[in-house]
Image 1 (cartoon, rainbow, N blue to C red):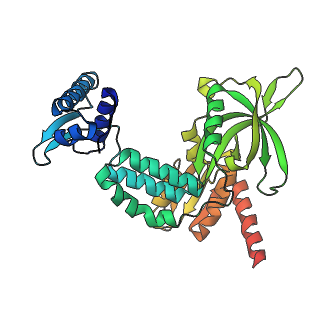
Image 2 (image 1 turned 45 degrees about the vertical axis):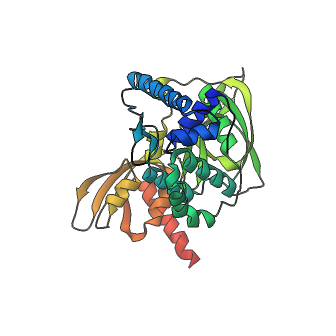
Image 3 (image 1 turned 90 degrees about the horizontal axis):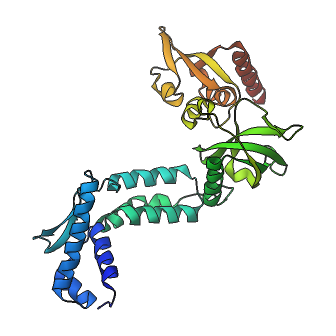
Length: 336
């Protein structure tokens, strides 16, 4: 089939197909676009010149168009540092599916764009086949909320330091909507859900906003029923700014609470699982029976994790946490 198109569109079409690892044959392209082979050669020379100039500005690029005698056409060769490999696409797709972070439609759209945008044409079917079963049986979360736009909009408010007013549905009483005025500082993902980290603020006489707690509250994004910008801005001092990475090291299941120093006995054979789960943890001693581990953690979430470890862990310090674990265990025994 012959396509009548402008020279610029023709060059862009050839360039796009070269980038997709397709073979460009001059006679085929000449017939396709209704031009002679010399026009196609000039198009290819123009693409070569563009890539050559780009290589001067970016020495790590190294992409060029060469003639492949075996394939009887022009192909694109060289490193494409910005393009993901097949194995990277496959790994990211598996992680996305395991996360269950989006609705089924959102997940299908994201995976399609990911594969079509990065995977060479000849490998697309292979990658699709490798994830097809898991994608077919994908189960979206019960809240079924579309989050992409909310993620982006609140992300912009974080960047612009906008104070927000939220209407939020509480976990224990979903029909009970509470209002919070917050300074949003980060969006994080954990255990299937996206979360907003934000300092709760209260307005005092004179209109000044004061933080209610020294640590940020955590709001599950799908439970934010509505939000609006109040018109207020908040300042972020560089030395005291919220750092997502440091917060993530110390929080479990996105339940913050006060920051504490935990010391415990771990009775497993290898402490690696604890050290991976609690990034701030370090082994400070070893006995015949256990590893003595110390970690800096937020109080609420760590209780849930400790209880999940059964008799493999024993809290030594602080005493208040040790007593809290005891009370939780006694409460569990009463259920049985």
